Image (cartoon, helix red, strand yellow):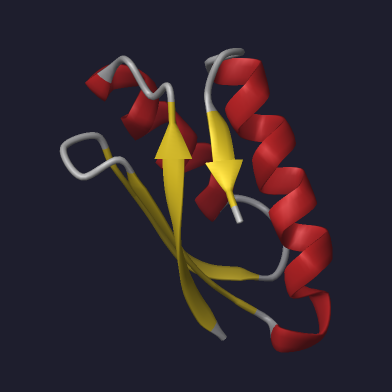
Amino acid sequence: MKKKFALEELDCANCAAKMEAAIKKLPGVQDATVSFLTQKLTVEADDDKFDEIMKEAAKVIKKIEPDCRIVM
């Protein structure tokens, strides 16, 4: 399954790159992109674990940039 999400309060291109790299390492994630320019997160992951993966992705984002959040 591949889905796109808006990101709010993403203030740093370097942070976006760190988020992308960390989300790609999560178990069950095939691919992920974080675009600072468009403020979008795209995640391709296992269908049966997608909600769980997105919860972990939200934690990763908060750790890197505490004000940033995923709009679902």
